[in-house]
Length: 136
Image (cartoon, rainbow, N blue to C red):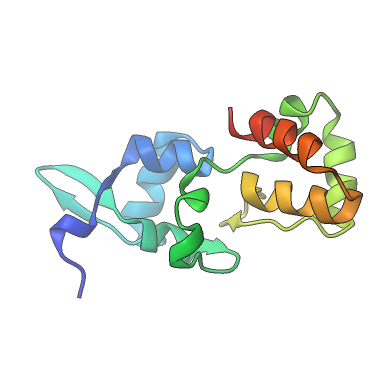
């Protein structure tokens, strides 16, 4: 059973993580699509509930922090890497992992980093630069 202390995320933090508007997050909470509770009139949810609605592997203890970083939309990733959304769509078609949130395609920075390192064979110095770009 979940307890109140598990519900650390408010609507604003959830919206930031999912790269959605607060109104959209509230509508998912009201509809029950995203589990949450109302505490003192404010919606709250937990990381476990967020990861449940993300279509992707559930983070394990060792990588939980990396998966708490805000997810990137296709346009966010394109902007951070100074490329086009079309290029990002090509990467997705080539196997870059996603953590889709309802009908929205999202990419975890850690998944993009790992995919680039393995797919492109980036040396550690380049991987470090990429990590900085994706996590800023």
